[in-house]
Amino acid sequence: MTGKFSRHPLKLPEITLIKPVIFRDTRGFFLESYNKSEFEKIGIITNYVQDNHSCSEKGVIRGLHFQSVHPQEKLIRVVSGSVYDVVVDIRKGSPHFGMYVGVYLSDKDMTMIHIPAGFAHGFLSMEANTHVHYKTSEFYYPEHDSGIRWNDPDIGINWPLDESGIGEPIISEKDSNLPRLRDMKSPFSFEGTKR
Image 1: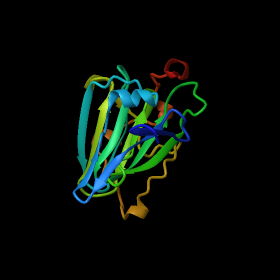
Image 2: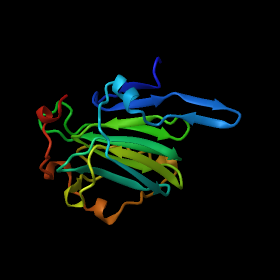
Image 3: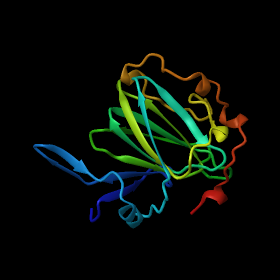
């Protein structure tokens, strides 16, 4: 690694893990969690405009969310605890439409996930008091807040509930009533989101 961050594509090639350089000693650690010029060196030229921070109890699933107008590119990291983070391709015409990728993120290695527009995002909190921080490229517009159901059988996400000792996940009423992917008209097209 020559810079402060390295970029690692996943099976959905637009979705990448970002690994920071962490300096550790007997006092603890230090890292840069974001540096615009260093991110540009690894090909991420996003202009982030909003930071969000959530706290979740163990077993909470948030998602799968996206913003239908003013779509948000996101940079997600876990500040405390751990999550199983999921991204679903919802771009019409994409060869990966309806496919998902799931990765574990935790405060142990500070790995981040970069998600372009055109994807739905959610996560399962694997520990109590898990804190997630994410940067977005667009402001939040509640009237354009949208999503797809976390347990859509057509997507078939293998949430690690049993291995985490989670019987029933905790889902908000809003997220429980999200549509299935096949019942939703996606606002994104593969051609319109390619870089």
